[in-house]
Image (cartoon, rainbow, N blue to C red):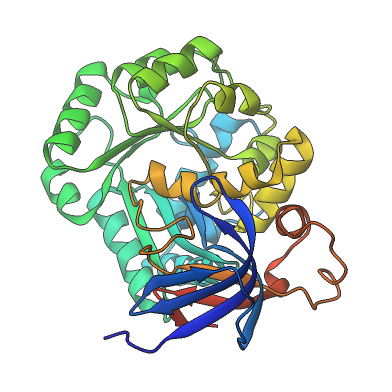
Length: 362
């Protein structure tokens, strides 16, 4: 049982509004017990933020990093480069590659990630095997996929995963998609869909299925966002991935102005490291959105999209999944705006401590 008390001090973001405060945080039994405005003596000092939530990954791609530039359909579409590599990779090598990536996820400050896992039951089991080999403390949500329009293994798959992750409604028959949605929801599982990455053709169909969230939405409009809000559908953007594939950028300001809950993901490991620090920097500098809003996207919003609101903010009673960012590294020394500095310039090398469920893990 977690009983040892831990005190952190410094600058932190408080509550759902990410209000910047100075003071201390007392943690006991894995939860935030007390938040005060005085600088209590502490061995852990710095800029304190919620740990990152990476709301969209493909860690199976760990065995094919940095492929040549090619059209998106040839890269990740049916029968494309990615599927061929995954089919040819021995199980042991695949698991080892995923294990390495999951460790990288942890050491770059993320304590929850959601993975769209290909390969049906076999693919989900391989990811679980890799996760169980990791010695670090973090949590994972698996959004699995069945074979092409195959009803047969859906029950076995849903026994293993946290939900269903659909590549695009354009890749499946409508009846099959309706079946997947009904099965997932009847089991209390999540449904997530890629849409609006290449064109607008799959956006309407994705919204009609009322998934928990939709990924990419590069080609979506304000009307799409209003419909999503009305149906309580979240969004996840993958900005670095969209730049690499040349698909363009999502209308992120419109998403936020529409009231959407927008999380962030790093997408395919073959295209990008699963590093949320890098994702924050790109989002901040490309879209010039207020730093605390970018930080919310990568923490609290991701937690809401994945339906785990016990994490993602710093408040009394919340699970203490936190990062302490040093202000005494060469990179972070002399910063004048702590939260902007975390979003725009901090790296994994500036992490002074990773706190998972109240315990210092690094």
